[in-house]
Length: 515
Image (tube, rainbow, N blue to C red):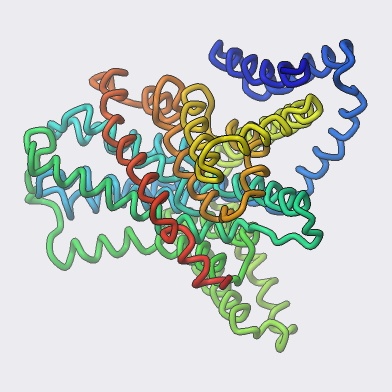
């Protein structure tokens, strides 16, 4: 093995070792990269001038309009968390299903699906669900392992169900890799892979995973009713039509927001970034509607006009009545400003902006560190080494993809999904996509489902840390680690099904976008 390739391998080993030692991800990636770049330059195996490309790459990250959707989706999710819409959902769904064994667990999963689609951020989802549901589940004598595993698994749905931030980042990285692979094969008018393609492709596999979770919980509820007992009926709780009205009221806001955001993306009415902006505004208006008092009228006015504008946009009516559009936009701007002021006065806005800035800064700092890592790794010839290694594996493209899937699963023990997307995907995706018969949409969903397990399995699964931080004292770390085992197994089963039935990922994008 040549010295540059040995240094490239040692870069990965050094990063994994320092991450396991607890050093910050972004600083680890940047520091290790600079150290190996300097050493490679000293021994004459790398030109340090290669780092002159780093500012341009960082500028490319800053001007990437797709990545602009990240802070907007995060803002939407945090605002919904602050406005306590999730609490109403969980309380109502618990009354609906709680009377049967395992019903409360089923309610947690169903509400988690809505929260995952509305928030798109795993950390925010697990904290919200855990704080609301774990005390209730323990109070009704649920097995702590089942309770912890259900909450952890449900929260990770925020990674696979659109508009997951992970899908946005993965789609951006895979698009770059897909175009690089085509250019390497002599295709100078390369096709692209959009985030919308990945959103559409992830819906059916994500809902399949939800169905498997529900089947498992129902089976446990009936086979071991002592572990998931039914909730005794509350004589004071609403029933019949009153319960139906309460359920409809609780579901209306999040379902409408999800439908507008995802629907506008899937039917091509808006880009993911534009839909994220609509989602952020919608979250502000829903929060304003939660404020008691007569101020809600301003939010309703804004919502009605906003919906009217969306209808005009969908029917191409914007170009025919520019004077009307200007008038409506001014009214929306004024009423939205009042709604924002009310949300700020209620104490929702400032914490939401702070959390959004912190999360966004973390993601983009890791991205910049990973960009430097990728640059140095390629400078040492690491990408050529990976390409040769994957090409020489037995089984052709299938063998190479299987090796990458196994490597990503094992890396999930020491790295989280963001780190794997930014560090590993740019290295392995171009040679994979250069092989014959590899569908980039299917490969992206396979990676997304695989990465979902990195949020759950020990020792460094972020979901486990989030859950441990907010779980009641009755739930120990052992309960959490044991409770997630069946759900990780379910995720692996879903990955195997997706391997043998790729149409689960490719069917909906082909129906929507052709090809």
